[in-house]
Every structure is written in C-alpha cells, then in structure tokens.
Image (cartoon, rainbow, N blue to C red; front, side):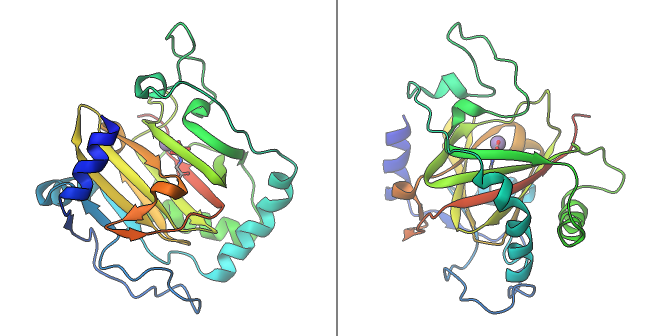
Length: 255
Ligand code: OGA
Ligand code: MN
C-alpha cells in the first residue's frame, strides 16, 4: 500500500501551492537557505492542497540562527544524558495508527507520546524555560493558538537521530487538542500527511531548519503525519538530506 503510494507519487507530478504569502525569511538573518523551493507544501492534487492547505502552515525562517542556538543551549545538556532509542516492531501500519497498541491490540496507556511510532529518538518535556527561549515560545503560541486557549503545560522536545524517523500516526485525541505547532532545529525534513481512510490523498510539507509548522483540525485528526527517514527524504523531486533533527512542539488541550 505504502509502496504503491510512493510509486504513484513519483508518477504524478504533484500540484504546488503555498499556504501563505511568501516571506523572504525575514527573521532568519544570514545562513544559506538550505533549499530553493517555490512553496513548502505540495500534494496529491490541487484541490487537496487548496482545502487542507488552510489547516496547514509552514513558516519558513520562523526563528533566527541566534534563537535556534539559544534553544539548543538550553536543551542539549539534558538530551545528551539520554540515549537514542531504536525500537523494533512489525511494519504494519495499524499497529501504531492513532495511538500505540500493545500485543493484544489494546491501546497502551500513553503519557502523551507514541513511542512505537518513533524510531531513533530521545525526548524530554520542559515546563520552565530561560527568558530567551520563553520569548520564542510565546511567539510560537501566539502564531498557533487563539488567545486564551488552554495549552498542554510542558513543551515536548523530540530529538531524532540522523537515522531516526517518525512513522505515520495521529496524536492521541485524549491528550492533545486540535492544534500541533512545532519548530524544527538542526535539519530540514519532510513531514508527510496521509488521509486516514484514503492513502491517495496526501500532502508533503518541507520543514526547513528553523521553520515552524502548524497542523490544525482535519489535518491533525483525519490525516496521519510522519517525518520521513533520510533515504526517503525527497520533496517535490528534490533530495532533502536529513541530519539529526530536534523538534520543539506545543500542543493545546482537548476541548
Ligand atoms: C509527535 C510528532 C513531529 C515532530 O511527537 O507526535 O509527530 O515534528 N512529532 O517531531
Ligand atoms: Mn505526532
């Protein structure tokens, strides 16, 4: 199924559409822009890009190099003490679909994460941040959530090894609300959204280093999301090398 999807994607040149007016990386000073692309969102068909695109945002250059460095400085010491986890599981999509399930196909008690869906990672959660980082997170929150929204207190930090990746899943509806907003540090990557009940409907998002992505509503509930492994990391025909990648993710609470 997945393979067929991949083949189809290669045959059909996807529609290209930007979900927001192009900005010229206004906040990111210096540093080569890693890829020259027309738009950070492509998809299986134009209608989908136009409709689902309303619930998907990718803001290229959302943070500066200095801000990225500030986040890394705060996160690295804690992350370095942990080991990357490389799990093994059967390669059947259902097993990690929606929320993790155990051998009896019963949903496991999740503390918020989808361990079986993530390969080659270490992670942490952080409630309090230094002033510089708090300021960045305030900007993320005001970009993603309406004022006064109830947010999940701890910010989720996920460190993917260069060989790490995130398999298709939908975040637990029990623990997270309608919106997921994530900063990407250290590496470009591709996030793929695939419709839960129709795998021919998909979007690829180019999450460039220092970008912010926001998934809302249907994009969050009716589509799986995944982060492609290095070997598969091709955006609209262009290879996007995957390095170690850290994401800093804010979520709201279920309504
Ligand atoms: C997750 C997830 C995406 C990211 O942790 O559930 O999908 O950007 N993470 O790391
Ligand atoms: Mn997720």
